[in-house]
Image: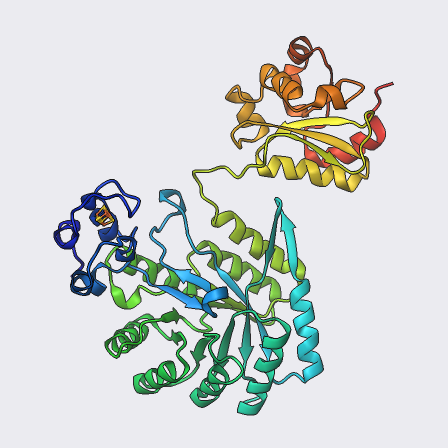
Length: 447
Ligand code: SF4
């Protein structure tokens, strides 16, 4: 039975010192009861009270760390079902499969390819997080050797997948000793064997199966002190995986059902890579903490990483760039000047098109509190007066000799007022960013 805020409050120091970042002990107790804070955040709580409150006050979904403390990937401890209620906290970790049956040169080649899989979008570089080392050789020796090579070449956290507990233990205590890989023991296995494996390897486990069996196993492991557990529907079909993801999240957060309060690992693999990529995108959006995938094609990885980038932003804070004058390429005083808002997506769309056009240009990002062109215009944040003020404060007045600014085609209606407010010449550019390249090459003309 989960503790109420009042149960927790009774055990707190009641000093209202605010060291936990909350104004009162009562408010802190309510946050703990709601799974939005942990007892560790109160430095004044004594050990006895901490023990008494114990598991009952733990967050509804456990935080699991994979990898060494200095470089660990954290998954779980999510607090809401819907992103707009607060935000999702720990982005889905993407683990790319590598087979231990590959020879050493092929393994090194795969590691080099892994390093190349980085993509920049909206000013942020996204990449893959982990390797899922698959014991396809069936040999303990091959698994140990492959782990050694990957650890040396990449050093990223790993998921080890095998049907043999001894093989997992050998890798986790051998080449990956102290690196806390996630141990995914496939196939029939007893609680005793899993407990033994977790204790020997001092690493987190993945428990896979249907929801009932997973809940029973997690509860039994918890009784034996093995709590760092990730749960999974294994290689189930898409619909079953989605059901597993949603049912377990609901059970943990709404019913406070501790046995299912664990981060979920989903598998998006198969011959049809396009279908696997679509699955992975759906799993990212619907609560997967880790995804194992065999997709190496960059064109299919980008949508998965983009889904993650979008879902794990704070919905209450528009993603924005600094409002200022940007120089793209080797600009001169006669280079074109385009104006847009400081909403990241707007700014980077314009920047990407200017870069692709190879016409050096300046971009003035006006502070619209991270809203897009039309939204900002409708809210009077991207208006003749705000643009005129930005032209002045950004230094554009001194740097742009021709005193001509190109505005987005969607706000052509503000052109004449902007001329009056700023004393600049105003040209109406294309409505969509995709038209910027042809515009700069064929139409930009201030003569
Ligand atoms: Fe109360 Fe502890 Fe928070 Fe201080 S840090 S206000 S004692 S809960």
